[in-house]
Image (cartoon, rainbow, N blue to C red):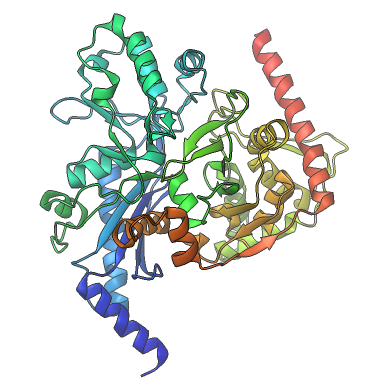
Length: 537
């Protein structure tokens, strides 16, 4: 037998005997499943494309979107397993579920959804976020679950009195498949502030919120309706018989599989890039973009542009999060594809992205004076409530394809750079390693080089970064099942998963760094003019 045939037989045996690990993550535009062997190598995958919708001014996904998408994704994974190994997937050693962080899913005592799912993308909680930030002396961004809850209270929404439980998308999926109302500490840190010493919700802030809620006369306290916090490595329940049928509509998956704490996409990104240790960071760039740095000490000041969240094991993390990244860029690439199709040219989409992205490296360092804003939705860091994608140029700007692509790559990271400059320049936060993952980095070199220019720091991409958060949550499931007594998540990832891998690194090019700074000056000047115009109106 060839080496490949031997490997296939070994993996078939692992699948049949239930030694594999499964991670499923709900991203903004894709639900992805990754099955790994005991050594954390991805051996099969499945996916389902989906998209949020703007319904009566609320960005949402329906219950049909969620369950139909999950089931289709798992069905696609089973198909891949069958085609590669000729067996049916029935046993799994451990499973993990993750999803986009934040947002608002509220349920009554009967477990019925009270209002449509409000995703992280909504910027409708400005009043609540500002009030809570002041009350807590701790930044509460608009997309956080507690901001959504408090805004609903301020709006005197009828459903609030009936809340028995509220959670995130990952927490909802986990609850319905296991019966457990729990949440991984990283995802929980996007619902309500976490005390990194206790690895639980901040007790003093819980008391402050309940004091704010007291005049409303609800029969619940915040402690009653939040999910229980768990850290990486803890058992978060098992797949129930009902949950197994929800996941696998064919009824072939066995119940009783251990499930790790559900996590947010920030935490799985940290796991997938080996970025859970102090002074490491990672940036996830897709529909949204966020960069996280594990802190060695607390920040000196409260910054409304910076989230304070945690790793899956509870260490403090500073995060700059932006609602917008590649959506506008992808729209322009789609326009170029439509142009080509109009002339009868059928171009491979991956090749089109590669050619256009690389064209950007031929442009002027500062994009030739072009300006663009990629705001499909509101943007918290730059204080805009609604999205209006915009491309602009002066008559004397150097308008060519290279500069056009370059400015759209730059603006994809424009708001992020504003946030990171606070951490790196004002707070003096140190980064030893920054890892990139997500769609922006799929084309080799280009995304890394643009990101390195934005932060003036080397950016690395691991070979496994393309597996993303689904692989990251599979790693957390494996950690729960395979860790030794006292073995930390950082040690497990560093020694058993990555084994010293450094990935491919792009160092910042001085001309690119200077060019990005020049672009950002124009970018922020334009934002200031727009804000002044809005205030005048």
